[in-house]
Image (tube, rainbow, N blue to C red; front, side, top):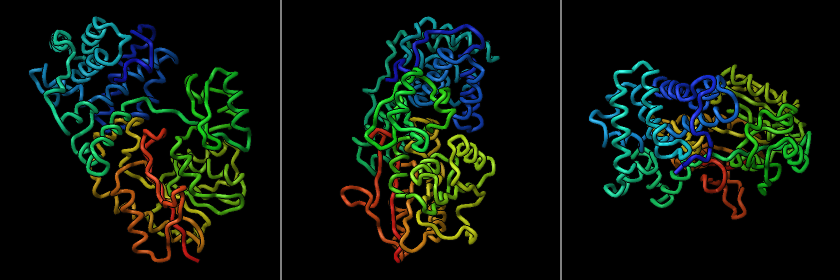
Length: 445
């Protein structure tokens, strides 16, 4: 259970009503298909930093993460199925159930009463008695999930709040035990890792500076990588504003290490925005040589430029480009990183809504990914290395895509990137970072 590890706030009244802000954010995600992190950034800025925002974040992400569990409960205690309820009513019920089950800091009576008040604030006062009745029936039943009535994939779907199709895909590819571990770990808060800008400081010096400012970090065993263990939003610290670090998951940092970028090289980051990998590669290059960072959309290219400026990186050249289309003007590179759009199954603990959408159109992704990879391969100079990566653990998007390149392009051979001599790595959340895949191939001379 998530419990109340993200906040110790039992209920908040000052300023804007955090529960209403959360409800409106949840409705937007459901209605517009918007990304949860972007919605949260925009809407939660209206709340005071600290306990109110932490409470809102815990409730917002918690409801998204546990959606199928909460709707399983509603099917048992509501005469009307969840899909037939008005969005405002459904959201108030889900928020109430989540507080009752997973936010131990919220008294049960407050969870019920606040949910009834919320549905009125959302303009559905006629449903107040219905919301009250459903929540109190759940309480009278001892808040039981009745998992003993389920088995196999059906039970995992409710226990881990993951669609049956996703449960089956992971079980087929990794086994039932690994699928269960993966999905349950994905319900936990995602860790925050920092990448030290070694052009401006050292890991030890940065750790000391952050500790003096109130943030807690610890070593990870990966060169230049620190884990944030306490102290709130790292972007509010002077060290961040001074360009001494950027936020980057451990798995991404390991992928960048596999690229093998060195000072003076010419490097291509084919699908770069928002730029985290480009920044790490440029730092590994000691800001020498040239790193070309491409993205399809000008606004996202702007994010790369802003980040590079904050970090003081001058070797990065940005370019608006479609990575799937030939671009003779790019030329050849010593190293090419091809981090393609994917189903995002590896980051569902950061964007929980992805697990409910991931299976939509997933079969078409490998072909689109291969189109980008095939184009990227043309920009690798003889003797150069191409790294293919995704933030998914779906093998059809990973091993199958890079394997196809090796079959169709005889001028590429596997390049070992692990101590065991393997040319690819699949990382799962239990390894510490996000679910991730990367593979390296070298172009023959």
